[in-house]
Length: 147
Image (tube, rainbow, N blue to C red):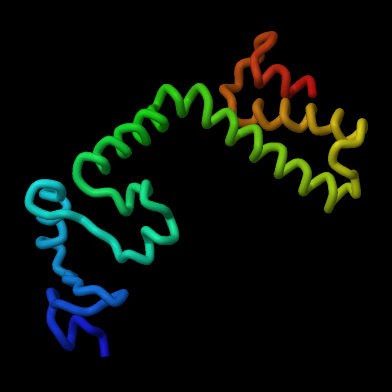
């Protein structure tokens, strides 16, 4: 039997060894989330703090939580995402995909000279696939066609 059927949409329980209010009520959950830090203080079981450490955003409350969140949001700002993180993710994704294909489809070992030449062509090709189809010199699409 589902707990909501047994106890209702809002009930008190002893989850994770601590007194906990459980809510399956959308309106109450929205109200709590909108007023977190003012009327309500979010907290998680001590076990999470023991695993993640005392500086985890899940463990911090109040001003320390807001400061850590601001640091995280600054780190993940759109400018930083576009200029640093996304290109790094793209590079690793392309490398991983290529190494998988080279090893499993063509029996080529990553890092060997022939494999590296093919990898550079693959990256040029993939950048062209996701670019605007402009057949102008030095555009990603033009380089992909040449590769």
